[in-house]
Length: 470
Image (cartoon, rainbow, N blue to C red; front, side, top):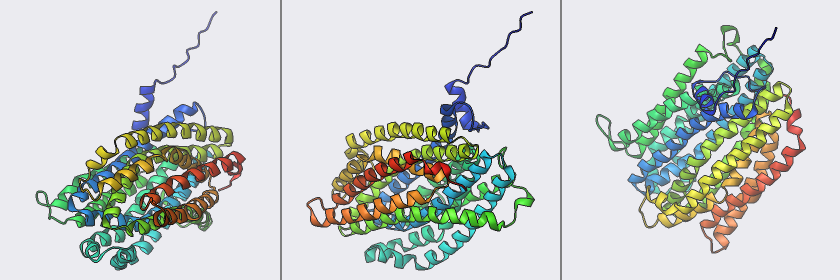
């Protein structure tokens, strides 16, 4: 008597794409590694695609208001990078801890970690938002804003900086979903937030329909409203629960042990990104010495670069989740291979985008401004930044791999060296003591990022990250 066994055919690429968009419930610690990367990366990349589109569309509309308005956005967002640093630092440690508990099959531990992260986020939102709201105009002045920029942009800065807690909570709550492997939920949440912002932006800036004409202030209000509604929806989904993460009444309490452990990892993660993001404040301060036109050029080009880099962050976030879950499951080799493969995919993507930006820089910049005082510097800036795309691509995956393992200290040292020992001094010297002038600031970024990738590669190959406990 013969028996036949029927083996199930592996899913096709299209089936995997549909599963990723719908929300995959695969165990990412077993099975095909390429498919695991695909299922996590697709929603994470799409999540960041709309975020990057928002960054470009926002400056597209604001650029219609003139160089002072663009400079207001650039100066305010240079301060907001500190909020992003805290949000990303908290998010990284949250993703790492939730992913590690999921990999260990500890559902209660994942839920408790998520609740402690929310507590930390709410406290940080209040601590940041109140002083920013009260002293926003002074901050603009400290950043080198002219009296005209301060007069026209104070309300923009007050809303953008005072409401910075919604940015922080948006990052943090989505980090919980990513750590649990619920990447499709995080994608949908950010899409809701950013679609609302994209609709409200032109309405509030130019007073379309029943909306008041608020100028650059309208851009800040649109962003706050869209992201605020997104945060409310996030809390709804956290309360409802997912297949992997269910927060029950017994989890809704302070857990001192978990909270302190999360805070410890978060502090070095926050410091890591404060070091990095504060360097952008230093760069903006140097660029501001060359006037409002140079600031406008920098703001436009950096928004376009963000348009490309944010989807790459989606791939990096996929690597962080895979590292955390596979270390929790006791599979360090699988975690290591996930990083190498994700880094390669990221290099191909971002390198290709860089070539397009270099070739078509004048046309791309022309979509945002025709100001003859702004266009040449913006074109140079976009081309110079794009020369570093391959370095950015591999570097962000490697640093996120350390973070996903819970090793937030190593990237902190890498950032300290790259941004403050190399980038800022080099930017100042090239801008002030060579014929490059403001272009020297842009060159310093590429040089620093390239050195940081080389250092990260050496440290990653040493393998200490795989022994991290969290």
